[in-house]
Image 1: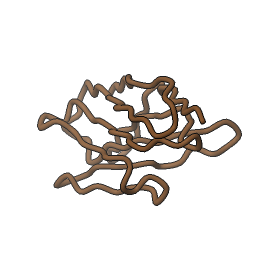
Image 2: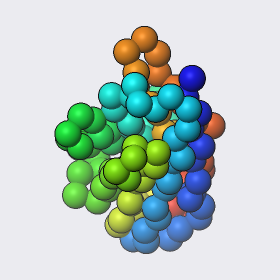
Image 3: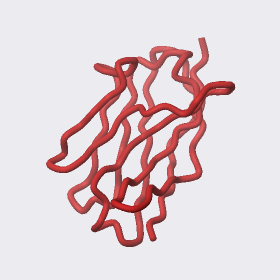
Length: 115
């Protein structure tokens, strides 16, 4: 079992920055990757960024160069630094942990970017 709790969302003007945090607890030693996803109203959930073995990262094209995913050395925290935010980044952001047999999800945190 793994629990994930996101924080750091909020309202920010276009061009601003936010840092999302995700606290990971439970048996996180078996996690092979951690990811951030987002879901905007009326749209499907999409992968934003992931960090895996050897801290290899992957980003959606829409956020490359603006967002950075990172984690602490223990693997108990994962972060998403979001810079140069755009109104189209408005969404609920979810943290997820990928394991061999199951993925775990947090409850989400709202990010709203005003134009």
